[in-house]
Length: 230
Image (tube, rainbow, N blue to C red; front, side, top):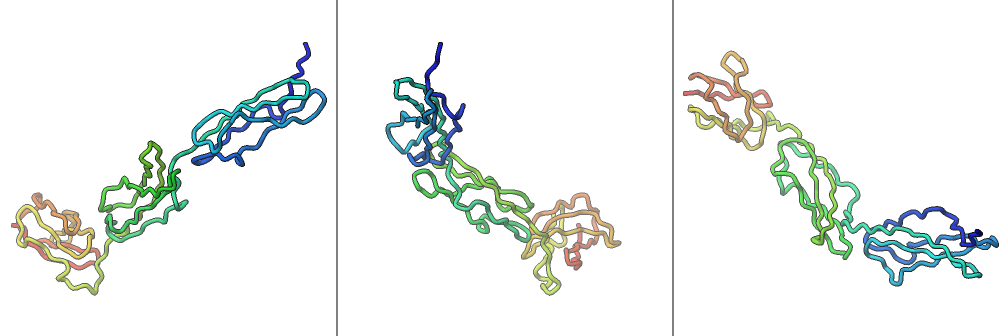
């Protein structure tokens, strides 16, 4: 039995993968060789371009004697929104990152519409981490992008007046709070300098474990505030 069907030059065709659509110019016609050594160019079965959904192209090779061979090629359309910026600039803030400190990035969907990213972070962010932004085109296609966040420690400068860090209430009962213009860690010390509690400014500290008496609150710059536990 003599098989005179044209022989494709390439055994298998690489899938075509494009964002949103495949134009006629994105498709390179494959070739085959007939029994006389003549190069034959394949013809495809796509009737309309652009192609906007996944499909399979069937290429047909026909020689001068009417012998035919076929070959298939997959077309993969990626409809995920395309971020406008390839990589997002890292965010670095002291103390915390509020929602207002973060500019939502954008992407473009297959219709050319701008899609605004939605973050997975809860604000304010007080620890270094990563924000994952999700772009949703509303038609079932999504893309994600990450952005690094670095939170640097809060430090009250020596020039700041002591009035910017106030112990309240003072004397205190179970809870005590250091009210300050900035968020920063604080240490509660005994009058002998022993660390007894840790906390953060503008957050109530549970002092139930402390005995009644005088204590010192140490700020990051080393200043000490006095408070009395009732």
